[in-house]
Image (cartoon, rainbow, N blue to C red):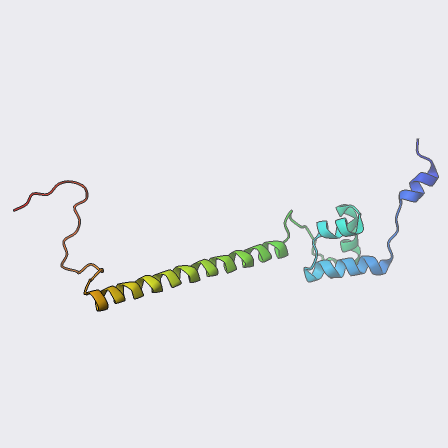
Amino acid sequence: METDLEKLQRTRVFSEEIKRQAVREYEKGNLTVLEISRFYHVSTTAVYKWLKKYSNFEKHTIHVVEMSKSNTQKIKELEQKIKELERAVGNKQMNIDFLEKMIEIAKDQYGIDIKKNSDTPQSTGSRTTRKH
């Protein structure tokens, strides 16, 4: 059975300024509730209590509910995905430019027209055709 002294040793008290600082970081979008709870080694319930008491959101009767991944984290992930896609599009465009230049060189230097002419008949696939 725990003694009163052991219970007191486990109880931690944070100053109002520390709580307000944590709430400010949350409101700025720098930290999530989970990140704050891990940083200060407190439960998420304690962080939500800090938010309720010190948050500007609460003064306007807005209740803070945070999903497992915060909006700021999702935005960061989406921005990263956009950068990756832009990079991929840039690479594809460079490949297209390279191939078009190769086609142009083949036509100019070797007289080979690689692009199909509009009067070229469409392919019939793999079936055999009759020769006239």
